[in-house]
Image (cartoon, rainbow, N blue to C red; front, side, top):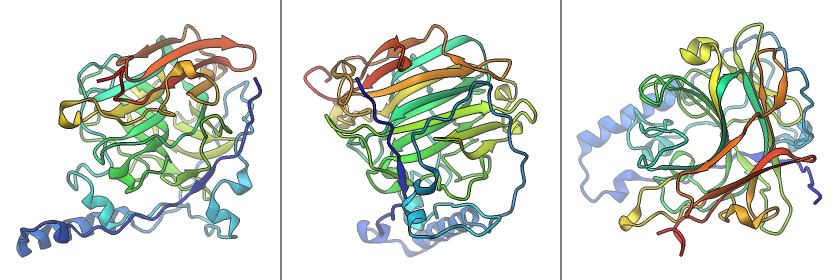
Length: 374
């Protein structure tokens, strides 16, 4: 089996214009005006002028050899046109008023639903197929995953593939750091897979958000836009396009850094954002997640990964490979005792393994509602 490591290109997409007033037959001028002013004020806060931040380069984990899955000079389409950010600035996807209008409320814009997100969830509406390690102190994680464009059947649902670093209990004090790719029509207004980050320090209640939609994650790279669309994507029985992600805690300053592809530093989550993760993670997860809103009382047909079951294998199913964690000595090591779990295996399943080429890996995903999943 030969794997082609191919570049992944991020492409900023424009959201369609949506008129809430036109879609609502009952128009109340005073209420609509107040809502519009709240949205405009929120968008103005999100799109505030940039502030230059200087941060010492982090100490990378021992044994880290960046995967050649992304070429630094052609990572995003806007870079190929000759455009660049001025010195001291970073690329940020602008937030529009129609983006906020798609959210359930201004307050919840850019945040995940307040539900339990754990590897053995049964009834939260979030369904997973993940590989995970638990029972030690983890200071980072690395993986290579292929990128797809799964179908999401409802604007209120999403499909993502990511790395989680987790600490705390699955209650009100859960801390997570998350990064990967996702399809979220509500958040982005389209069906494109997009590179994203997330964090929370209180189980998704009042802290944290996607990307740069609240203060927290500090971007240091001026060539990559977090939240931008990824192109090209893997094709069924065709070429596979990989994304390499590394998240680790800098032993000198304690911040959690994100690296993409062949050594591209994106930015960091300051340690002061967290309670439990200010020290280390107690669990690392890799894999897929979807939201099932049970339309018409049936399981959603939102796809996870490629939309095909793990048993179809390379070129057809989605995968994570070369799974590693960072230990107490800031060394990258193969994941020890990887466990795999699909909490709804008739809808989305997972099969793990290990070999000389990929190290620890797994295939995962599925179509959602089908003859197996109802």
